[in-house]
Image (cartoon, rainbow, N blue to C red):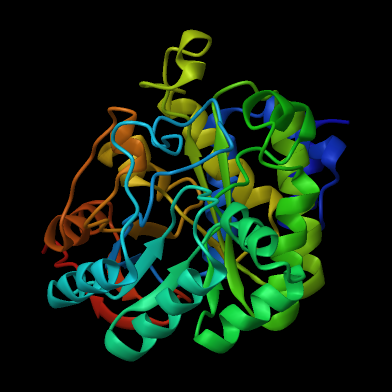
Length: 364
């Protein structure tokens, strides 16, 4: 096995194996990975434009019982600082977001055992009816599995009722690393990799679009990264239900895992992750760079390492903030960051429908 043969295979649109992927990930020079990833990016998305979405990421509850050791956000029932908002309160939040131009709400909470299934259904249906400007991108796989538990319904039945209420897409949260070796250590109560994949599979069967995510930079090894990408690539072969892949690095602040992993993953590692995922995930159209989780400069550089999307403006975000990691931007700065990276900015919807393109002014 050698790098030259793998490069040739990729450039001739042949799928690489997990063994070849691992060899590439471990041995390729970062700039060679970036060049190859950028070639693929422009084959899939030829326009010199980078997409972004006007979104917000509020939380309806921080009550959670699954004790993930990488999380600083959750509180146990009855602890100081717990909250659960009513549907009325969340609808008012959504209306406020809509008044500020937000088009997508990515809504998640803790796994709260006291919430009935009807709460989640009402959240979706009322959002659709009362805040039609907002596209609901609601609920992680962990929350959906909790809905299955509290309702007594099957997973397909829960997903169908959410669909009937108006939900059409689901965020990819809860994946972390799809390797049970790692999951047993960082989120033992959250279920297996197969549980996450099964929720996504059943959702895709019904017609939902979802994102695939990965949180790295903790206890995973290179083999776990490749395993993660392999299983989501296989699932994408089945239904083409994933719109994008979104990796981000673990933030240790205020988490139980901070004692073991006290520092952030490096920008170099992030660029490797973006580039490698673009190469390996040959059936994904979009790879998202993150100004938010990795910093604005690193996010900009990632746009030249295979990413074609810049994420959202994130009017509200609480999970990273609980780990003492905060980046802020606004629509104008987001557009400026994209323009300064050498691209036109394309405002999109949740499902990558282009709403408008803001052209950069080219130097004379």
